Structures are given as structure tokens and as C-alpha cells.
Amino acid sequence: MNELVIRAKQGDSDAFVELFERHKLALWKAAMAVLDNADDAADALQETAVKAWKAIPLFEGRSAVGTWLTRILLRTCSDVARRRRRETPCSMDDGFFSEAFGAAGEELSSNGRNAVGSVSAVDHDIVLDVRGAVDRLSADDRLLLTFFYVDDYPTRHIAEILNVSEGAVRTRLSRARDRFKALYLGKRQEEVEAV
Image 1 (cartoon, helix red, strand yellow):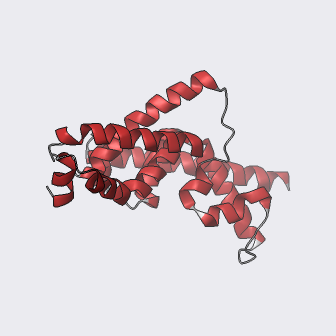
Image 2 (image 1 turned 120 degrees about the vertical axis):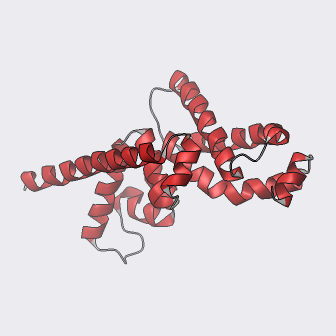
Image 3 (image 1 turned 45 degrees about the vertical axis):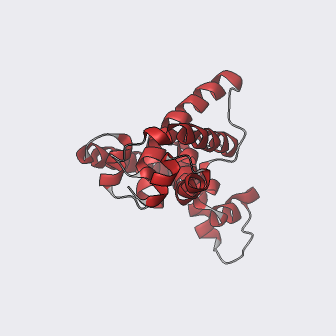
């Protein structure tokens, strides 16, 4: 175990905060992929930090800290989603795409305008079509695609996080890609037929 983990296990809150901060962006992306709502993702991230702080003395180092934190986050996301389903019938947030892909997504998705001016209208339409297809994917598919394409996690790391075999991850990724492709191409086909 590295020094930060050892210090955090001994109750050093500064060490824990530094550990958590190192993994915060990846955790945020995963929370957005699962919950598709910035407020819910922020709640899940905060709850994950509290749960991890309470559990860090029990951390045995059998997996990487990032893997351990992501597992806590995914269980927390399930809890948050369950609570939200009881509270509100639908999400009011703009969604996964802008949060997961940052400023470029915001520039291209805000009110259908290209705020920067450097992306052509065709590129803008493609981004909106990709966003629409991603938004229609299941949370599991969004999570896998985020881990693999946005966070650049190898399948081995994803397998550790999800506690499944690498083969299962490759199969799930393949199916998620196929579902994304069907949604994306289906949308594009509808536009072609409308012309």
C-alpha cells in the first residue's frame, strides 16, 4: 500500500482527501454515466466520500484504491437512483453528454447553438445525434462506454471494478457498441428518409 493509503487508514483526513481528489474526475464521470443527472451524481459522489472515509480503516489493498472507490460509488449510485425514482418521475437535468464530455459538449448542446463557431453545422448535428443515442442507452451501457472510451480504462480494470471477467467486459462492451450503433444509425436513417 502506498503512503497515502496507510495514512488515511490511520485516520489522516488530509491523506484521504488527497486520495479521493486523485480519483474524483473518474468517479464523477462514472456517476454521470449511471445517473444521467448532475445533482444526483453530486449527491452520489458526496455519499461515496463519506462511506469511503468510514470504510478506509477496513481497506485491505486487495484492489487498487480507485477500483475500491468506484465499487462504493456504483452501489451508492444504485441507492440514489432508487431514492430518486420514488421522489420524481423524470429527470430535469440536461444529461450525461455535457457533463461527461465537458465544455465541448456544453458548447455544442446549449440551445442547439454553436457557441464557439469553430465546429461546422454538420459536426454540430453529428454531436447532437451522438448525444441523443448515448442518452437513450441504458445506464449500464453508458457506464461501460464511459469507462472504456472516456476514462480509457483497459478491460482488465473495468473487470476489477465490476467484479466480472475480462471476457464478460468485452462481451458487454461489444453489445453496448452495437446498441449505440443501432440507436445512432437509426436516427440518421430517419433523417435520410425524411428528406
